[in-house]
Length: 187
Image 1 (cartoon, rainbow, N blue to C red):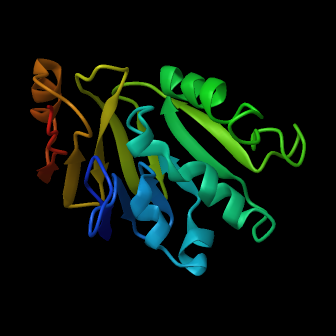
Image 2: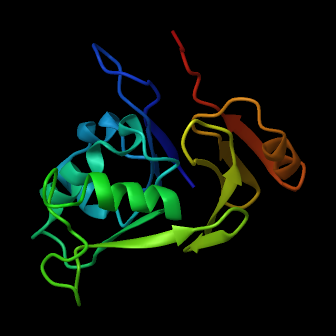
């Protein structure tokens, strides 16, 4: 399993990209402005996007990614997130006012984007890579992710503050893991 950090900042500017990681060639963890540095060939390989929460620095490039690759691929892109985050995407982004609803384009029976609701502690198997939603503490409903690729794994907390439930979840991980935490600068 290869992990490439595309962005890890809460803002933009020279050398800064908002949060996004590419797992191998086909999975994004969050979709911040770092996605914009990928080539068309790389964008076409992305099949799954796991979102930690609904803030713009984590979702901003989902609409642009979908718009860019639509018509160049047949398989839909699956957006994985909690019920609350999916509701925010539907209500505030993919609503025909801010951006087209790719969940009904080209039609309801064959949408270009599909949603997959996540629950805490439930593992999604992505061709041998396991991604589990972990509890975190943020101002909006949010999750972190435990990403397993065999002997080693990564825990990405996303945006969080003190969260005892996260530490309990980490004690249940049995392989070697690295914790990657986005550091927030709160003014």
